[in-house]
Amino acid sequence: MKTFVSFLYSLALIRTLAAGTSIPEYFRSMPITRRQLNVTQVQQELGSQLSNTTSIFGPNDSRYTKATTRWNLFAVPEIQIVVEPGQETDVATIVKYCNENSLEFLAINRGHGDTQSLGSFNGVQINIKNLRSIDIQADGRSAWFGGGVYDGQALNYLWNEGYVTTTGACDCVGMMGPALGGGHGRLEGLYGMISDNFLQLNVVLANGTSIRVNKDSHADLLWGMKGAGHNFGIVTSFEMNIFPRGPDTWHYHNYIWRGDKLEEIFSALNAFHGNGTTPVNMTINFGNFFMNTTITDKEPVIFWTFAYRGTAEEAEKLLAPFNAIGAVYEEINDVPFPEISVAQGDDVDGFICQDNQIRITATAGLQVYNVTAERLIYDGFKRRVTADPVLAAGGGILHEGYSTKAVTAQNPDDSSYPFRADHHLMLFQTIVPQNNSRVEEAAWQWANEVRDQWNEGQPGRPINAYVNYANGFEPLEQMYGHEAWRLERLRGLKAKYDPFNRFRYYNPII
Image 1: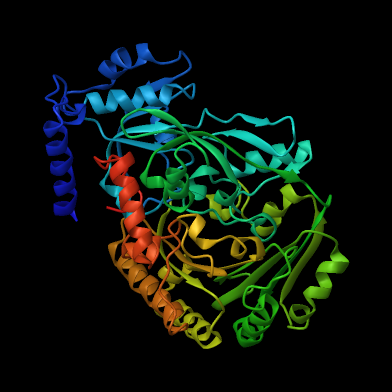
Image 2: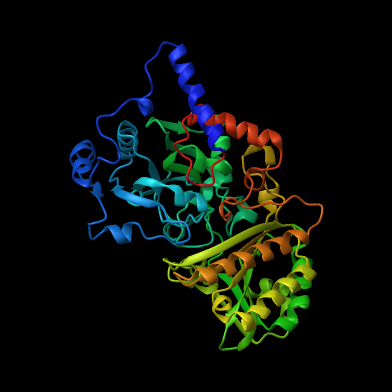
């Protein structure tokens, strides 16, 4: 891979020289190198070019620890300097400065990326958290969002104004990060994925140029940003569709079952989902195998939660097969949409949103659940409860199911997101103690075992890894699509918009 990248670099340089133009600034000998730079220099040289609401600081600053906190400590980028732009226009200036001084740069919002490729970064972090404006347009059909807007913020603001839009399911996560990889969420059955609702993107390219991307301007890049966008630029703001908010309340029903009910549960789930025909208002359901010692310390429990856009009466008719399975715990209520995340445990204060954990992950995309495979996975967890209780204590095996009608209605060729036929997203996610190599190694063995059991349970289907859940060890085809034309098109866009591969730290395509 490194040889291929070097070849591209050389080819780009030869073409530049042959054209008689000047050598790009990336290759010029600079009076200041990354090793020579310090925070004071950057504050003086770059700070004078930026808005007065921008912050620049380094490891000795009291703000540094919070600014570089990450959700997953598995592969942590090395941050020498943090720049928090105060205005959207600052981002292009920061990128140009980094290029002029041979500095690598990494744009973040909420710090939830957890792929292994992030661990290779060393340079300047551009944190766009200050860019959090939301501006509903006069026609009420779209809104402009700052690049630093996050899911919970957008959901609550729009709801209070009478609207919703497609966001991810976790309130703590930024909107744009998941969107660049496609963007699954609670409303996808009704309105599609987050990226399906892009109208316009303001993007800073690798050379510091600011462009507007839409169906009439850089339409080729718009295709790439809808599923592989991490590879092409920094989105500083974006316009997307919004929709009337719908019913005032949603219904949720949470269950906890013991392991002896597994076959009944997954058989009911397969019938319920109908291989992609889930009722659109039964927007999301997800389940987890994990330890709950208030119920039992001998085996994992099976937790499942359903969210319905509408009344309890309508929802419970659909949930009758699950009500017939004897649960050890149930919780039912009707709440406004913004409170559904609290009920389902993925609000900003929920366990899944807690930072500073080492998480070992693996993922798979499924069409239906293989009941035999799920039994193998569950029993593997149960064995570890006895054999390795430290490992088992942090175990979590997540199953996400969505209403997918509007996702599958899209022409799959119209975006770079490749896996619209996957109805379920699987995520093995185990938290391990810090500085414990034995448990970490055991967690990786477990992660690979579960991933393989999921994939072996759907013989004849290609192996898919949702790029936002991918750990970065997967082949490119598993993250970006198995059709040769998809990868060729993505590489063509890369050569056009980022020929020197500056955006290569999140599951890079080259």
